[in-house]
Image 1 (cartoon, helix red, strand yellow):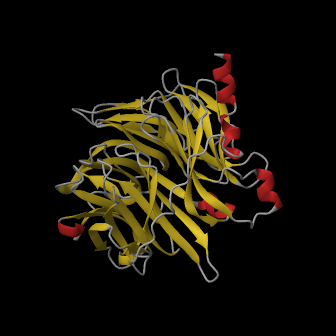
Image 2 (cartoon, helix red, strand yellow):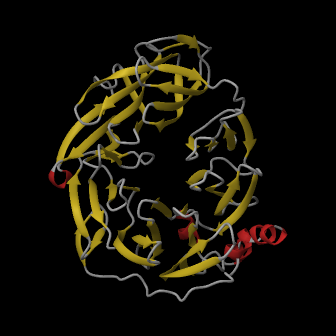
Length: 448
């Protein structure tokens, strides 16, 4: 037990410094000719493009909402705005070129108001929208059938000038919503009960007659939440008004996370024993990846100058960065390039394996990178950047954890946000990028 504890305690040092276990670096990711494109990137030749659809002129994607897969991956919903008006567009059919408006501000799906947040159910059969109804000074929680569309139905209503800090589907029948009231406490009404209302976490049951439960024993202020797979814990990311915290939903207690708000939750361990998050270093402005254990309320450094990491299905941590970087090295020479690497970290044994990605970039570019991981196929889609003499090159890389291989899916001049999500089977990757001049949904199948 003592030896195991010592190895685990060394875990953050193994990636922050050089790895003690290194595999033979694979060949650089193949860079082939380009065939097809997204709104801002050229797609590598040979990549299968199964959908390519321009979004309406003037559509600006919502950077906080990745593309949402609907109903057995038969369609995709994209949230954004047109001329400042919130809208959720559904795409389906061949090449996903059939466009429908699922809901928009002041539409039947958002009666009298403005869409504050949207989330798809776990099976994609329904969309939940939080709508601020300015005509009645009320916040309404609506549920819309993602296939047939229609006006949807209200499952809860909060009186007062409320803001939505977070909205998540806990399961197929329960929606968790965090509200903040800027007015005095007022009644909340559902279709079966009326209870007192105030800022905090509410669980809204949508099955049968429905129900609204205020989890009122939680005393710490809440921001955007990320729930553990077993729903025992939730992480509040913090914001200008709240500090980051871990909430034990069983005993409704809070434990503060030693980080400056806001943090970004990257991934939960499959067994809910820990989670990864990106945050600023304790005494500086650089970004790093940290691992937090709710059982011990401790945080450990995983990767310096990085924000791209996730857990694989077997509990291995997959992190992008460079094993030789340190806070001191970056402060001494922030413009020194470093090799892009993937570190595979076993939290149980503290063994670290390094795979090279075959290119170099700046520490600041590592920190701006992101990773979207699917445990269905144990694949990562990595959005990263490489400075060029005349531009900032964006590269979209697929990394297969089972094969320990990387492949450049697309590349081009960085322009605007890029949002990604995997299909439920982990085979298809949906990409939304662009701006009001041209925004597109593209679905590709990475090589396997």
